[in-house]
Amino acid sequence: MSAILPSTRPERDCELLDSASFGVIEKPIPAWERIWNRDWVRKLAIIVFLAVVWQLYSMWKANPLVFPSFIETIKAFYDTSRTGELPTRVVGSLKLLVGGYGIGLALAGILTILAITTRFGNDLLDTLTSMFNPLPAIALLPLALLWFGFGSGSIIFVTVHSVLWPVALNTHSGFRSVSNTLRMVGRNYGLTGFRYVFSILIPGAFPSILAGMKIGWAFAWRTLIAAELVYGANKGSGGLGWFIFENKNSLEIAAVFAGLLTVILIGLAVENLVFRVIENRTVKRWGMQA
Amino acid sequence: MSGSPPNESPLLDVRGVTLQYKTKEHLVTATFRVSFEVMRSERFVVLGPSGCGKSTLLKAIGGYLTPTEGEMRLKGQLITKPGPDRMMVFQEFDQLLPWKTVKENVKFALRASRRLAPREAEDRAQSYLAKVNLSKFLDSYPHTLSGGMKQRVAIARGMAMEPDILLMDEPFAALDALTRRKMQDELLQLWADTRFTVLFVTHSIPEAVKIGSRILLLSPHPGQVKAELNSVPPDDAAGARTLERNIHSMLFADEVEEEALNH
Image (cartoon, rainbow over all chains, first blue to last red; front, side):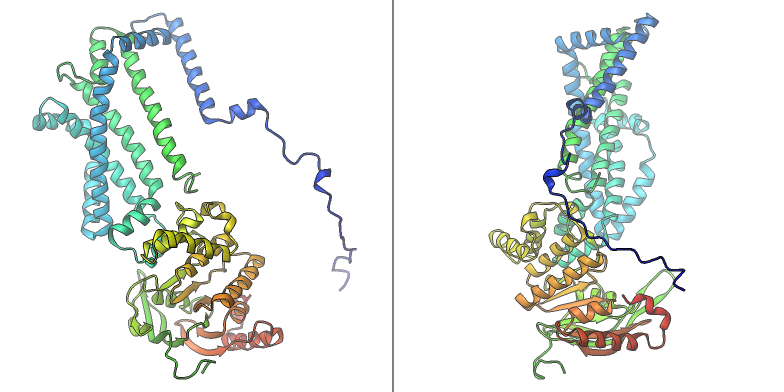
């Protein structure tokens, strides 16, 4: 029997080393590695790389009418900015965008709060989102023009449509995924109704809400530019989409590229300056998102 | 019955409580006509194997479920809904609000339930967190804490509310064995300091004997009261072992295969 068991071995009792006798306990990371560890440095490197590829390709192609180079685009960007044309157009677009986005978020908020507090609201939201979420906002533009005429009303209408459903869908699924334990904790404190929604459900669902807001923002931008491309003639106050359309008509292709570049730059800025900051201060700090 | 004088009215009176819940296909009876009384400052443990409905029973006392039969009264008041007079400590580590720091979690409980003004809430949160040795982590977010520390915050939060009764649903079950023992000792120490009333649910016989001053044994499928026993003083190791053996044979007399449930 004892042959099956491992043989008894001597026991060990070791002296621990003094911390002073270790070689490395903490060592600073080299400067270049620290710089490369920053997100924005790596992202900037990607952007610079793309710009260089663009420039080289356009030089090889050598047809500025079809594919202007990076430098020509930047020049057009600078010229139209200096004359004040581009900034006015950007401001015009942003006004509509913020309006449409804001109304969309507010409506989505009302619908989802209704949906989590009442069963009828839940059915209403389910039905409406499955009906309208697949409907492209641009497809509603002809109707919008009929109802609201040529003007900002129509554009805001389609923007609201493009924001409302994805945001409502995300927020609602966020509310439903708040853990049962957290819900019980909230009720244990005696929270009910709106106090319960605002102090437990909304923060608990914040990762999904934020994701919905990001998607909504992108959708709003796309819809807005597309709608302005179709028409934007609100005499002199047309937005960025109209700027792109006009310049294409007058074969100022570099200015068209400058307009597209502006759309991209605003997208990058909002993503990295607004949403990133909100994320870092909320869901990342709370450990609800890696 | 227990050490308390016979004319003292019970703090919590559970009388003939039958709890049922519905799954998609079945109506399940979790407990059947369970009755017991908890006196003030008792450490009352509900002990039973998985499936005896002990957690369901605790949730019903918490006010989350309504019994199909029988009634539960706290200080003579019928329990109908959740409330801060019965603070819960759950088994899950996600019971702290992740968007609040350790201190804010305790403060928010006091503020949300409208128990204290901001200033007093701050003081009380700090003093209870000091009791569970977390003064260094007041401004940490829950996700940076270990499981044991999270449970300590939950216990501090429950105690800071100074509820009539603290309801603990296997709060140490998800902890490693060493931390669990330490937490049990700390809980007993806290009890010695403040003599709060606690209703503690567990499936571990040694834990029940260690934590409890009185132990209610439930049999499984559905949960029914099998016995109600007094525990032994914490320093009586031999008595504890005998009691553990007795409880074990009472619970598992005819089901030897369920022995694995016992730690």
